[in-house]
Length: 417
Image (cartoon, rainbow, N blue to C red; front, side, top):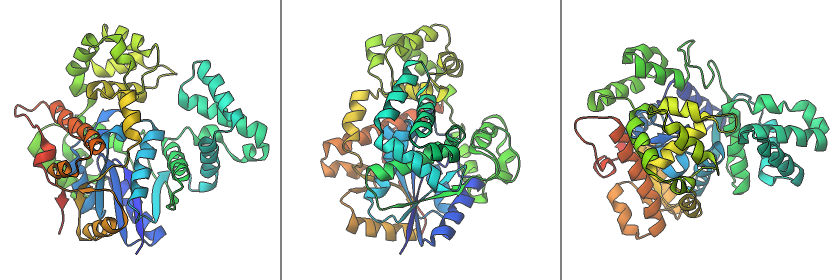
């Protein structure tokens, strides 16, 4: 019995994901598949386009056997923390043989070499990283420069082979490296496998070719009729998008939170802002200053962002402000992760996997949300609190006349029999 695992967002599940799933099963000869997916908010610091149960339905109906939610405290984080949250949960299931992820290159060797340096953090690398950060560069750019310096000085033969800047300029490569690093840091037995991204790039905004990017699909869904993306998603995905729109009327976007963000930035004092997750000393001044000039979230993010503070980081900070997730709280809860397995969807094979997980893992499995109370676990409840709060915030953003509150209690996992 071979099990392949994924860490994904499926926002929404498209033909590229379908190709990835089929190729992963082919390469690993796996019998079963597990996807750990972000829930109500995603890694780039935005609300998910659709609710997490709709994403789970798409995944299950397109061939994934078991869908588990990545806790909110990790879903809206840097690539490093996002990867750590997903990998550590996948590992603690104690049944996963392979982890398959997308990358812009198929050869794992250069990614493994880079991941090794990032995991070990040799003194020279750390010194160069600090130098570039002190010069005002963003963390990703500083890291790329420091890695180049390290390989040039310490491993000149490898430097000729590794095109560091090109490798680290591609988002799927960055996540792939972080997945490999996380597997190394937790000493996991899961085998990593990369599948080369085909057709369009991650950030492409135009629908073209046979496989469009999720970004292009989302942009079209926000600005055009649903049928504009029909040829770029599996039929099951299209059907679930129709069902979602009929039920909730609106797809979600960060601009739906303009008033909430503006209110919080106008009422929180700077000391409170300095405590927010991913905030940096001095950045709170820039955020407050720009908030007096811009009420539109998109314009605000654009105005705040610099080469040191990329747009995605600013978006994540705004989400953390809405969620009141502080650095102290995150560090406390991180040490207790993984604390549970939250099931969002499963088919028959998925229930077979759950039975095997019960025998091999000590983590409590939460299928019905209300049942988490019976575990009487303070930290499990604290982490789940942010999952529920993020779900409530997601539905507030939809601006329906009818309020959707406590949906974690009302919606059950999608079960395909």
